[in-house]
Length: 273
Image 1 (tube, rainbow, N blue to C red):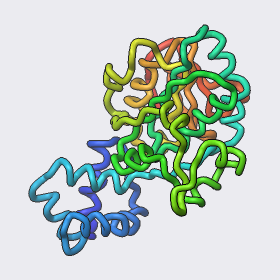
Image 2 (image 1 turned 135 degrees about the horizontal axis):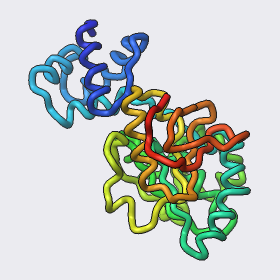
Image 3 (image 1 turned 90 degrees about the horizontal axis):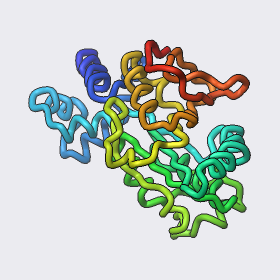
Image 4 (image 1 turned 180 degrees about the vertical axis):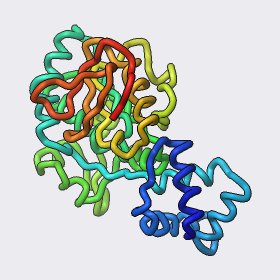
């Protein structure tokens, strides 16, 4: 891959997805594009990119973008966040909603582990939730829809008790049981655009989880994303970002002493750091 190719990749990621591709990821980018090139019938990465630049193909461009996204996730990532959600927020919201399911949007949910973690916490308490999990990566969403995970993925965050209660063995892997899968809806969405009306629904979301997504975005993309998270969230709803993620925005204000937890502010975004 030439430096010029990498410059074009950076521009592609920025314009279509709002994500920054730092110069130190050039070698990683070439490594990740190798399987895409082979799958699409190209001899090498250079041939793939030459085709992409000379004949921009929407599907090929998105395949490239999705391959370069950071899709790392695991069950119950940051245990204290899920403890706060399960012990305090979820019971309080369930009581306040008076029988209506608590609505949750997991934005940038990758292959589904975070959404299923939230669903398990609700089932543990017999509480009703509806969870929408969106992501830009089709491959991640396909994996989430199958709800099949390796032993390593299951054990990365889940205790044996939860694994046995909510997953069935499938050959040498584990699949989420129907009772868990029916709670979560998986859809493709780009955070640079407002969430489609048919996904927003008639009731606002009570909780939005957008964790470890903003940090990879360019400043203007973070602004847009925060605006698009703000609109569908209930006035008394909460936004969860990554534990170490900070924002400078009038749309949300951080809850003191709660890393990564924000409530709706008084106005739309002015800046996002």
